[in-house]
Image (tube, rainbow, N blue to C red; front, side):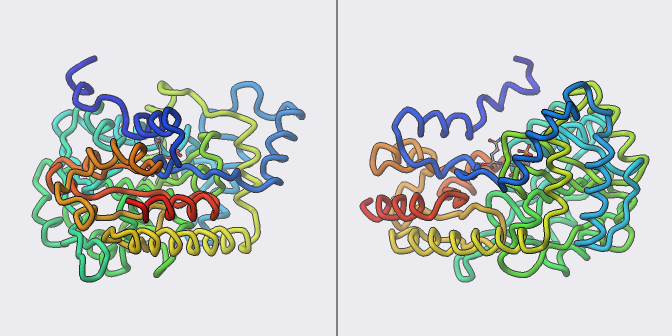
Length: 385
Ligand code: PMP
Ligand code: GLN
């Protein structure tokens, strides 16, 4: 393994899901739903397969039906206009969108600012591109049970070598949803310092407090922003690996240059099904959100009763907790490794999402994209700690 990747080892999600399988514990570690997405969307995939739609290499940018559905979605939800022919690229999940964006847009030695804790593939993709990550740490505020971005720290992190901001809102793992004021300040900074922004908005539909505002909708941002989303999160089909970007023609062309040599194209029949999914009525998205809000409340409340300090998420399907009231060592790694044996539940230590590991040490993330009875059982086990 080369030096760029050596520090990353195996992703925590694979490690913790393997631990769940080995011990038979309830897996609240890796974020994937335990119920598949809508039946009619699955049927659409079957229909596409049977009709021979996409069984051979689909077009590089994605099938036209899906690209059009993505632009209609951006218009309907956010009043953002994109051209399906030149301003959309379908990717193998958001993961490939992040990788291709980093490989396409960065020069070796460029600096990339990312909000820490950050999703684990960001650091690896920045490293693969030969660039340098510059973390700006979100601060936990026990009094409000939320995380806060310090805009002065963000501004101070920009140097002449900064090329790109890699954002994520709603934010995994903290559940933070950046506010209009924060996004406006980020947009102003990006314009002032002439930065590109790659914004990972895969949890755009999973917002429980406030609203999701795409960064691309702020003044001056449309031309400099790559927006990423994924059918994995919005439609609960994480195994299909259908993601996409929307951006200016120049940025899409650049990212496509990298994508063509990573996967060439993304799986065909699923693209037709996701095109139909994106056209589901608003009631689908409202129900998804309401269902997950109830699950957030169930798990957050249960974790608090079990003695954790809970950071109640405004978005995503993750809740971050501080284990120190239960475990004075404050070692989230050790806590997560022993949790399956102690009470039959798997969680993820947030330290893996930090460069400043000590800042993340006492925090542990639980996923709530699980059936209500599974969450209730997990809570009752955790109360026995
Ligand atoms: N970004 C974030 C913030 C995520 O949480 C995930 C989901 N694991 C991804 C990207 C990857 O998405 P996908 O499964 O579509 O590759
Ligand atoms: N995004 C999911 C999480 O944060 C898992 C994705 C993965 O396993 N790569 O848990």
